[in-house]
Length: 240
Image (spheres, rainbow, N blue to C red):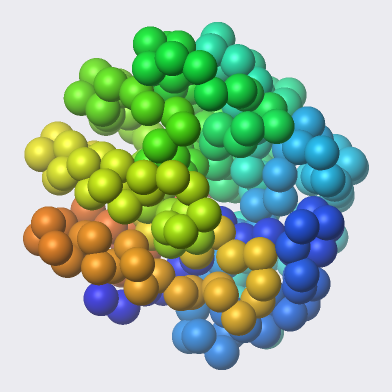
């Protein structure tokens, strides 16, 4: 598989990452990526940047050194009601919004609570991508939730960075991908890079998808035209 975009990347704006935006752009260019996204954590993560970083990221041009830049965020889910740590009016002005569960923001609880949280997130029109939901600490009803992701037009992320760092990611991602295949829910393969050299590294995710014969037509970042259609739809609805 050839990938043209990495849409989940962090910079030193978050203290647990190690590269600058410029270093990330250069790494994306060297990997031959056409698109990359700026997706810093929302402000409730302990070392996340101030909300002004999110609002002010338009200082970075939409194209730099031949790489198309998507201005976005990895917003944190705070509770089972689907509360997010960035306000809707800000999310409405971003090009790429990932919603994820992180232990400092929402403590793992029950399968029922996690399922309820994802069902509420599915209904949020400002969320584009479901972030690393293969995390075994947040088990949920895969069939029910992925049907909701399909209904509300969400993209499911297979996060290469989660393998080895979040429990049971390999088996959960395989099962989630099978449901996405069965229900024809689009996915995006991302690095979740916290260091520039890891941008565009998708080896573990590719292995899982290959093993289950996942159709490439459902992977949005393997084709420029397919990816740009989705980006164009998102940009058409921006409130800036």
